[in-house]
Amino acid sequence: MPKKASVLKFVIPLAVAGMLLAGCSGGGDPEPSAPAADGPSGTLKANWGGFPQSWAPGQPMEPGYLRVPYETLTALGEDGFTVEPWLATEWEQTPADLTLTLRDDVTFHDGTAFDAEAVKVNIEYVRDNGGQFSGALSMVESVEVVDDTHVKIVFSRPAPTFLTMLTQRNVPMASPAAIADGSIVTTPVGTSPWAYDEASSIAGTQMTFALTDDYWGEEPGFENIELYGIADDTAATAALLGGEIDITDTEEDQMPTIESAENADTLTYPAIRNNIVFFDRGPGGVFEDVNLRKALCYAADNEGYKAIDTGVLEAPQQHFLEGEYGYNADIVGYADPDAAADAYAEAGSPAVEAVFPAAPFNKQQLEYFADGMNELDGVDVTVQELPVPQWISEWNSGQYAFGVGNNPQITPYDWYSTWFSAQAFANPSKLESPELKAAAQAAIQAGTTPEAEALWGAVMAIIVDDEALACGFTVGSEIIAWNSDTVSGVEQPTEAWEQNLVNYRDLTPAG
Image (cartoon, rainbow, N blue to C red):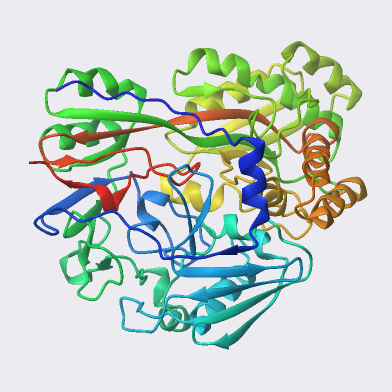
């Protein structure tokens, strides 16, 4: 069987960006994929390297795990950009509020009704729990239950891309009963076709999800899904080729073994936007001096790293790529590593000690960045490797002065709100310059007008060029490998910038 090796790029034309920002109303029922001709059957065994430390909404967890039990209020269409109905069927949005019409035939896996009260509980929970995604909900002033199938979200400031944000991992719908009793942390309870089966699971090794009897949508291809946490890529490859698992994420060094096998296919797609974020940048912080931040940004040399890592598809000088809403052609960035010494001298050549927290899959990149930074006299950056679940939950928690990790936000409003506003959870310094705050407020107030695009470009320039709050940008590929003897239908997921993910509903047992 020929190997599949497709690499696609997510590019958002400006016309489509306008659609993303418009969000005035939506209607019609979603159209889930058709089930297999004979109905669901078999068990899909998927490995994504490490289980989430928490299944609570708003907590960091890999999409490959989250999107098994959970669903979102809205979804991205097949074009990867257009916002479509899912658990919410219609909406009306103004600068002041958003009213959602909800499906009336959905229940959570524990029997709790999905209704306006459930939506209110989830949004308030994510907004108020101080998790990674709370900053993106900081504009939610209140959530009002109109009736069982209508909920109004009132904004303290305009939120033009709120519907797009709802398609992502920020606010998966979890059972309000499980949230209330705290069990949601260890036991996911959502509305998807597959409910967690604790009795068939093995703690720390395997999580089993079984098809529910009363799912509201079309039946999927597989009856059951088993999730695994095999962190070692070589062991995962052996398990895949041996038939112990059906699908896994993998790395470039495993490709020769996988490509030589007759029973394996692979899919490569851009899924990961990594960059350096300086967390300890407040008064007295390690990275208080903007010239120091610029020096380390130059020294990191993301373009040099791209040359040695085939998994890096691009090494841009900003978060958004050309064609995406938020891209600013005037941003210069830090492409010249020779400029590091001058910027360091401007900072006064201070002695600097800092730790990069790393996971096994990004340790090489962080060691490369650290080596470049340590070329500056007085700079001592060390790399500390953490287990995957710990790294996911801690790298951006403020325990470390800086870090490199996934920045999946697909609108400039969400990226700013998540990492750089004074209210952002991932801004532990709670510092935001008057210039950045004023520029962001102007962009937010512009809403969906033609002026908004240029205003958000100005915000991005302040973040990157003026204040060096983020740098070292790389666009990484996700490599999915699967056993072609056991599973078929693997395609690039429609969800933008989400790693460790396949289109679960479209997968079917091979043959």
